[in-house]
Length: 220
Image 1 (cartoon, rainbow, N blue to C red):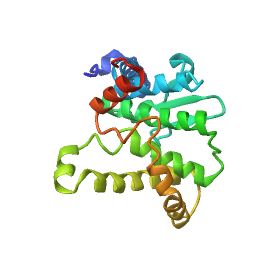
Image 2: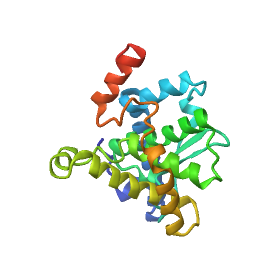
Image 3: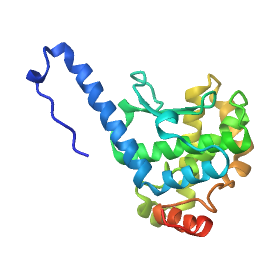
């Protein structure tokens, strides 16, 4: 999506430029959020599954674009206390990033809905981060064909999921890396092989569309 150019004479003085940039980022994030909700098979599938499990998502109430702290490695988050998904508008540079990030957070929301994840339990947090990294497209959108040929999809995928889960857990928990790694290892087999609500790890939108036809008998 092309961004609108900003000239210095569009604002009263140069000090106003950061505010204009933030406003532009917020509008772009909202546009990409709306597009993801309307066009992304991953996101639409998760909405349907959430509704099926008694946790329907109200886009205007449950999803927001907000500015996150500068220097933060967090791109977004899910707050179970109010069922809110936050997308970091200053870390959402493309439609693909927003769609993948929204799917990632919807998997956290789904886990909380169906499994009552306890966010103060490190094993639960590690498990949902493994699942979100594995099933959201975090590790399958980029260079998929190259990885499939050179390394094998599953080998690359597992390594990517391990790294992303480690990064995500450490970003929200002040815990030694060794303890986080041990916890991820302890829950790995169960959580990595839990593909719900998909029937396997979705590698692309065609996989998700097929699952939707099989599960709900309609096209996304």
